[in-house]
Length: 93
Image 1 (cartoon, rainbow, N blue to C red):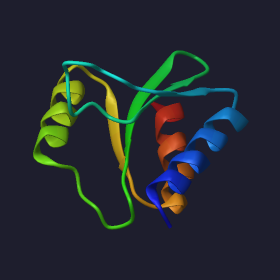
Image 2 (cartoon, rainbow, N blue to C red; image 1 turned 180 degrees about the vertical axis):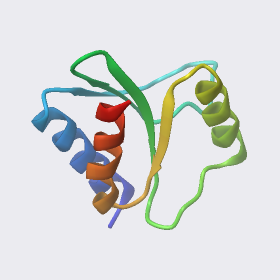
Image 3 (cartoon, rainbow, N blue to C red; image 1 turned 120 degrees about the vertical axis):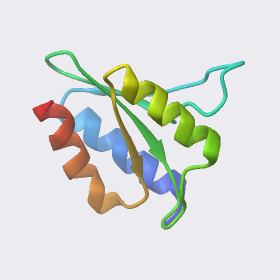
Image 4 (cartoon, one colour; image 1 turned 90 degrees about the horizontal axis):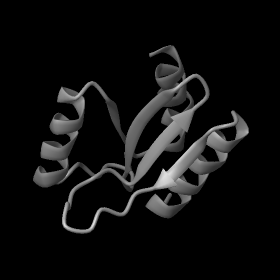
């Protein structure tokens, strides 16, 4: 499965629970996750989507740590089977 297909499934799953999966574009601040997930009840998290088996690049790892140090949840998603668990974790936060 390709990264684009996984990302499309994430967007659909978030929409199905009345949320938004906003595509992030951060000029001048590389390494930010692909999507900002906004769910009901002020739940916010970030998701970097990767092709199956791919890992975060060093700059992406740095951004992940920076966002987590601010208290945000950050996930690396590389398989559609992980989507439900990620969304449940965001909702439970």
